[in-house]
Image (cartoon, helix red, strand yellow):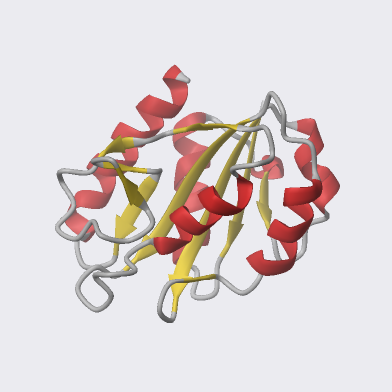
Length: 163
């Protein structure tokens, strides 16, 4: 069973979370805003899809800070974790979708298995923490390339379904 957890300030990441839910057949009851959801909700899911926009010079969306601290204390052994985020590669090329990389770093010692990595060659700027070894660590949606969002979403959902 899949649970989607997101943090959104302007609504872009919330919209993306709902699009992911629709594409995967996840019910709205399994989609959570981390700003108002207790951490114990994660226990009921085998797969966690975690999304955050990137703010400032490569920071998580505000609601994620306390949630990720609690999530780091949870036993995520055996759980699959996929990451997604929104960003702006033109204005912030060095920190584009860095929230994906930050969540990856924060959860790397929790026993989870990361899923949803994809080839990064289609991204114009790939120097942030969201990119590693020629791959993007999750679904990175670029506010400056909205014409590529649907294709990237479909490709990522296919990778998630295979995992």
